[in-house]
Image (tube, rainbow, N blue to C red):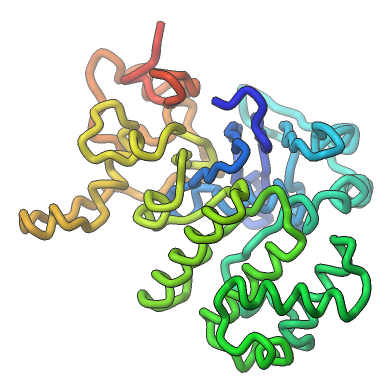
Length: 367
């Protein structure tokens, strides 16, 4: 891993309380990963694995309780290194028994107020985010250009209306939106999904942040538009060298844009390493969940071989009733007799199995 990453997430835990089941949903449970400068890290996993909640935790945008209950989120800016959760632990008290969270007492108002004080220096200015549904993420009562210009006035030195307008038009051109001057005056409701996504990317990059979080940037778009958005992201990455946390369930998008990749399952990172190595279908040292994900994705080779896609048996983990052992144990088809008991009873640690390649699996555990 990089010695001084731009973003470092360590043992992040974000829980929600289910009133119906009277229990905690462990949406993010011990996530550790980092993003280096000018690097794109892909975050992959099935729906419900905790990818988007990890991103929302970094941005301080969660409103459901109790939300973040522990961990560190370190970000390095021109002003130095800052833990975005610094001193927030004073607002929460967690009672655990046998590794299970029994109760959480949290001063939601105090936490939110303290978090906003920290995040106002980072959100939008140092760290920007592209959300899953651009049409609903944009303000329907403001023109697209007005929203981008407002972001520029808030987060850059371009304070005047004319300067902000010029910069907004520049970014609309940069993301290759057709007729930028016309789109500047257009409301989101009359724009296509692809245009809204381009406008969202322009707004996210208009303050020239150090880091971009892209949460499922191609979701809800047709295949042709998806390809164009991926082309745009690839081009902008090459031109701006911005650090990116790219969240997607589409392995082809992750493979194309990412330098490293983290595989999430059941709220935890189960594998983290170089994208070419982790996503290589011929790589032997892969987490069983990673291998199952890759086997379930269509490829040119599978089409040539006329081979069937492999489904991942069983259901996605219920993060209310998290087992004591490996979270993928009930769906794993690579369990061996020599490690079966450990898989069933002990949660494996995230260990480095080779240079820069980390895995949470008893098959590859050292010692």
